[in-house]
Length: 228
Image 1 (cartoon, rainbow, N blue to C red):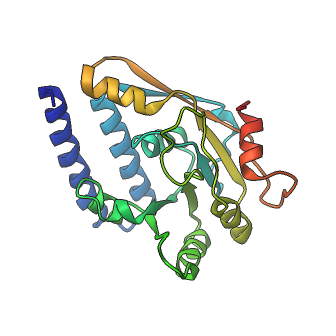
Image 2: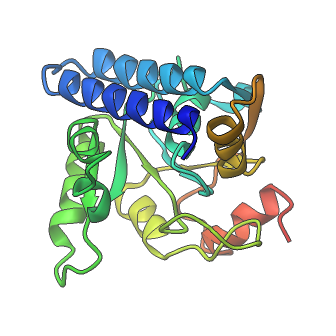
């Protein structure tokens, strides 16, 4: 590892755990959302990465959504958070068990507004119950329907069925967003080369009715963003 990589890793670890501790003390949802946004902006700023949002005018303030995004990089949640800032979207992220147990992200993930998805569990009722309780409190749900980071050459990998089920069970309009660059390539450029003025572009799509069964979510997503 280069000196810059070591420095960035230490800074990121300290920043992530500092914010992870702060979340434990906050009960107000507006303040909670603002802190999560502050973390996203602080982290990306330290990497010299800015976010450009296309189609922000499509967002309706103070509305609940199931927000679905493609996923290539560990900074994707930060990019999505910035895309919907100032819109009154107070959400819970669906997070894998591996993140809960992570040395780097564990405390942050547990405290920063997430719902645990344990794919090894034989009983998913508690998972869906927690989502329903969150939605009943006015929260949106953030999810990566690919399930894990896409490390292939394809623009997106196959969507899991869970996202569409969550939308239908909770009557949530689906808000698709598409990170147009490969954010992982940009992140590596920031860490390895200390490149300045990097930019990620994220596009806000049109709402998808949770009742629409004419296409799968993956088909609708591809059609919106012209993904072959």
